[in-house]
Amino acid sequence: MPWQSALQSARRILSRFRRPKAPLVDPACRPWHGRMIDLHSHMLPGLDDGAVDWGQSLEMARLAVAEGIAGVVCTPHWVYGLYDNSRERVMRICDMLQQRLHDAGIPLGAHPGCEIRLEPDIPRKIASGDLLTLNDRGCHALIELPAELIPSYVENCFRDLMDRGITPILSHPERNPWILRHPDHLFRWVETGVVCQITAASLMGRFGPLVRRFTTMLIQHQMAHIMATDAHTPTARSPRMAEAVLALEALIGPEPSEKMVITNPAAVLSGERIHMTAPTPFTGSECSSALGWRRHLVPRC
Ligand SMILES: [Fe+2]
Image (cartoon, rainbow, N blue to C red; front, side, top):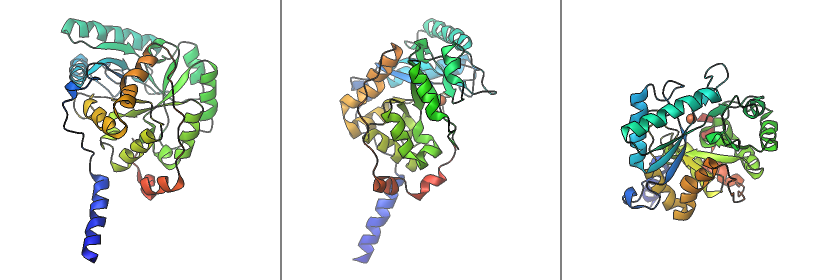
């Protein structure tokens, strides 16, 4: 019947916009609850567009603990000419946060870090100690790519970092419009050892259905190694993780999910290498059916 096939098509289209439903499981009963490490958070107050004061920082910390997060790496933006968050500055404010967490009885470990916007001389700035690696171990740097156009020096920059023993971790590549248009480049980078951190809210559809589908693709192709909150506030961009981990478990199972929220972030904290599975390339039809022409409409994140 023509109306039945029309109904089926309509359902198929609508399902693309529906947020994934996590299974009805109490997150507090899962083995990862209380052990997760959030590798990307803007919890330090007054350093960027994250928490504005200590009150917000502590509120975010309480929410993180309720989500089952045991440790957080505080990664304020470093953007040339906009956010000048030097290593010394971030370390100092992070120590203050740890003290305040202790005084408030909030059981959360705070570690220093930085989300570094790509610039040609960041390998030198990191090596000289001007900019922070994650947990100041000198092993992993959280790198944010520009949204609209990826500079031609990006691969040289990755190579330079790796030659210095620093693994680049790309923050939320699934939300980068250029990468959505050129997923094959991301595949090539991951093949050479670049690590990808996806955002929990991307998997839950907070950035729209296209970003959610691309996030799922990255996970299924072994191109997502760490999931973090990228929390900015206690409300709109809050440190929510538990629901996304349940969705992740439904997608890839409990063991690989734990790897993304416990094992791999813990390795970064202690300055050890992350053991990565070889990524599987995207097929042309996968890209065109999952992303389609709408990837050109992805808003700037
Ligand atoms: Fe961020």
